Structures are given as C-alpha cells and as structure tokens.
Image (cartoon, rainbow, N blue to C red; front, side, top):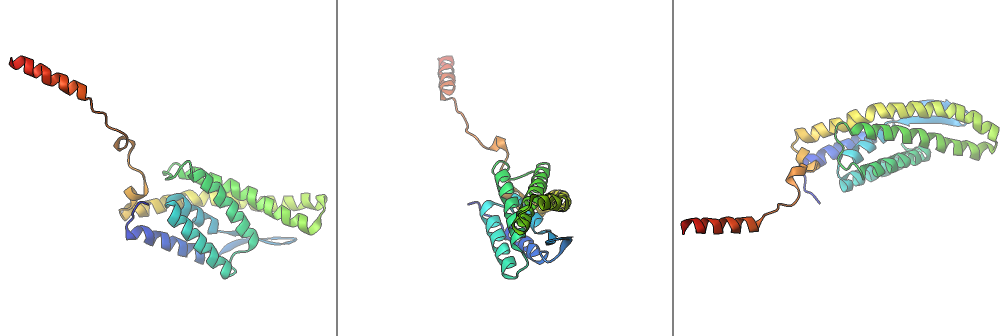
Length: 209
C-alpha cells in the first residue's frame, strides 16, 4: 500500500465528518405514501471513493454510514439507493482509478443516472408493497420520477466540482503525486543493447592497431 502524508488522511477524515453532519440537511418532497429526502450524502461518499485510494476511502464511507444508521439520520430506502450509487461508482473506478478533472464529469453523470434509476426503482417497489395495483403504480411513477430526475440532476452538478476541489486540496498539501500514478514515460522497461557496445569496443581496438 502506498504511503501518504498525514494531511492526506486529515482531508479524508474531514470529508467524512462533513458527510455525517450534512446528512440531516436534505430537500424533502411529499408523496402519498410518505416523503422523499434528497440528501447530499451520496455526493460526498462518491467523491471519497473517486479521489482517495480504495482502502482508506472504503473504510471512511463504511464508518460514516454506520454512524448515520446509529443516529437514525439515514433511512433504509436512502441506504439502498446509496448502495446502488456506490456500486455504480466502484465499477467505474475500476476503469478510472484516479479520475482527472475531465474524467470527474463522467463520475458525475454516472452518479446522476444511478440516482435516477435507483430512487425510481426503490420507491416503485415500496409503492407495489403498499398497493399491489398496477394502476396505482403508474400514478406513483408519475410522482416519483420527477423527484428522482431532480435528484439526479443535482448530484450531476455537484459531484464533479467536489471531486476537483478534493484533488486541489491534495495537490495543495503535497499529496498530488502520492494520489496519482506517475507519468507513463517514467514507467516501463529500459532496453540496453550490449551487442552494439561490444561492437563499438572492437572497432575502437581495431583503430588503435
């Protein structure tokens, strides 16, 4: 595991703390079966996964979610939707381990789409468990989908700036090179042609003779 400076883990810790304390702040939308909370927790959790290394980021997210569940600041529908978002981002991170400023937009779009699909699917399942009627399900979809779409657009707008802000903090504190792989030209093998050096040596000896 690559070693990091103490400031790397301080930024990680502070981001996780902000994630916890922003959980009660949410946008609420009323539905016949209850209310939907549009929280900022997924944005911060995705930014942690996208910017930091696997182990510290995963540990910070798991601990933060455990605290939120213990404090009852995260309902089970929100938890399921958040897990769907994290699965989508983890799959993307396997192909983009250290997203650049431009690639952070791809993380934003992925989070937005997963949020729309996840929120719509979870609340339609809840509606089916309550009503067991297809007609009511279609009506409920017309109420849930605009809220899910608004949530996805909000996350799409906020995720990329937050990822780039965390990258800027890492660069400012001297953790940029630790967090991002070195340039491609610094990696790879170096080929040494011993045959040509021997040939040059023989030629040089012939010239002396």
